[in-house]
Length: 261
Image (cartoon, rainbow, N blue to C red; front, side, top):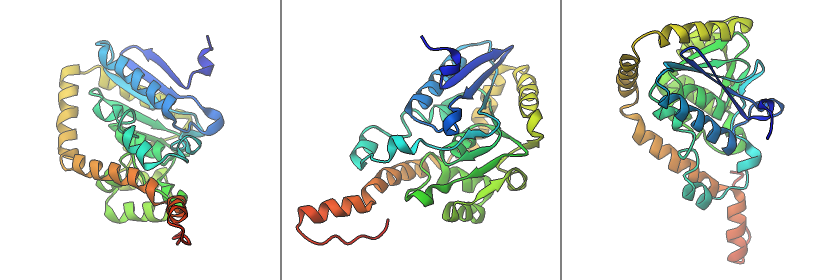
């Protein structure tokens, strides 16, 4: 059996607070199926544990999470994405988790990492944090809620700017835009997140859960249809690659017309 250091997700408790930490430091905590399944399992455990009133989700000082593991999905076809319910099957466990979750973000939170942070109820950002949705640079769209949650959090203009250019937003800009709730010194990030989590966990858990559901309902009432559209668009994006045009052209014995998409 491997040591805790070998675990892709580290899980601990501190009083009534559950702690979950992404642990793939050599790839900046890139999110693959194993990681997201482990995250979902940890959330299942904390949801079932009546002694846990709040959860803190974190990564390393250099990276909360650098996004989806491209090595795992680069060859995925539309049929595979659609048939396996890519993203929805495990990433969205955070969306259905009923207790409060604080994302403690240090370093980069890019692509899927940024989207995971946005699924949490609050984001505490270290001064060195950077947020971005750079999927445009690899020929796809944000597909774990990015095109739907980011505009709701920072507004359409800022969201279009980030999605179209793939540029990063620093912690100070993220706070001004409403993406994060607090910016703290990098060395104090976990202390502040834990202190707040302990404060939250000290309140009535049923009331916390009801409050979370009420606020989420106000925030996400029109979101589910948008997420469904986004997810199907993400799946369909696999079919828009020049590889697919090349294969079609081969079967039809014609010269392919590539669009650099």
